[in-house]
Amino acid sequence: MSFRPYYLGIIVLATIFIYGETFVPAQTTDFAAWKDADNADNVPDWVRRMLARDFRDLTGTAREELLDKHFSALKDIAADSDVVPSTRYNAMLAVGLLDSSPGNPPIAYPAALPYLVEIYQQEDIPHYLKYGALLGIVRHAFCGIESAQQDKVIDLLLETAMTEFEPTEVVLNAAPLEPEVWDWFRLTALDGLTAMKTVGTDDNVAIELLALINRKSQKLENLGRSLDSLTQENWQQIRRTIALASKAAKTLGDLDYKSATEIDAEKMTDVLITLTKAVCDILSKIADSVGRDGASINSSALLEQIVLNAKVCTQSVVWGMRSGLMANRPNENSFYASLEDDDPAIKRLDTLMAEIIELTTFFDEGEKTRRSVAVPNQPKEFRFDLLEIRDALAKCSEVLETIQTDTKTDATERL
Image 1 (spheres, one colour):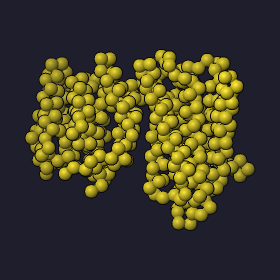
Image 2 (tube, one colour; image 1 turned 180 degrees about the vertical axis):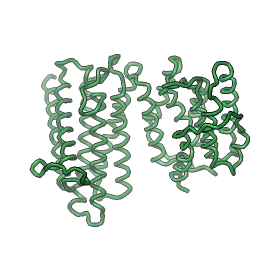
Image 3 (cartoon, helix red, strand yellow; image 1 turned 45 degrees about the vertical axis):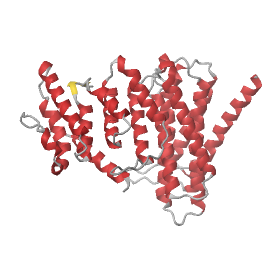
Image 4 (cartoon, one colour; image 1 turned 180 degrees about the horizontal axis):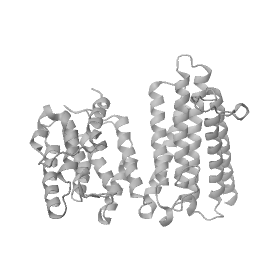
């Protein structure tokens, strides 16, 4: 049985409660009822009610005692292999949602974090429980983690983000881990690194993320070289690769570079340029192959997906270097702001920014000679076809290749 629909089902079921706050009269949660398989569909709502009801107006010792009691009960449910997977997952998720004190952000229940880390690192734990634990760890990261735990959590998140998918052995009564699912783990870990904000000890977080982006750029280049025809399988692989690389680039922009000491500005600039070029190249090749002979493919849908993937990449790259949106000035904690005014990387980043702006303008308005004023209240349509977007992507790639080549030439001349 495919793990993906099964996994999606428990994720959706488990997260419904996050978006509501229905209050009912105070009472004690009956955790024994959670273990009944017939009640599995009710558990997400029970978790929501438990969090909103049981701890309402509770402070001090009374709150801590109830937290300890509920924590113990939730761990028992999560550990019980006779309980249905969705309920075990929801129990694990609830552990990460326990708060010692409400607020914005709240103070997450400190005793839960070591448990979540321990569960996540156990090899014989079902993947859905590991993911529930990871979500809890990431929530603690957003709420704030005490300094003694920070390095351990950073290492755990970084290891997850950097680890490539490897097929796991299928065992009795266990669904196999699929590449798409492992990508969720990695993307979620990147969310955690975003929350931590630090470049890491000796800038290891930033340096590792740069290595990850480089690997994904190389993968896109390899996929492009072997792309003879577009299939659903290789298209999904391309999209997942772009998504992970883009998220890593965006995460770079969420870090605070004021304390950075070991980051090579030229290398980081190279990485951002290379990723943008690799995405432009492979999307351009797809647009070319389908645009010339795509009768069996929905070209309108593909055009939309090409634009979406290109925008995700370019906007993430902009965030990575400026820690802000394209229209905003670079954030004071950004990589760009950390550079000296005479740093050679500044000129290359400005060129990259200019090309991204031009490409984004093309996506919004089409080719320059055919642009017209948008009619208010009229549905927007792309003002270009697959072959025109191919040319726009190829042009951007050519400019980026030029600044890459010029830099390599300058480096050679200095030797």
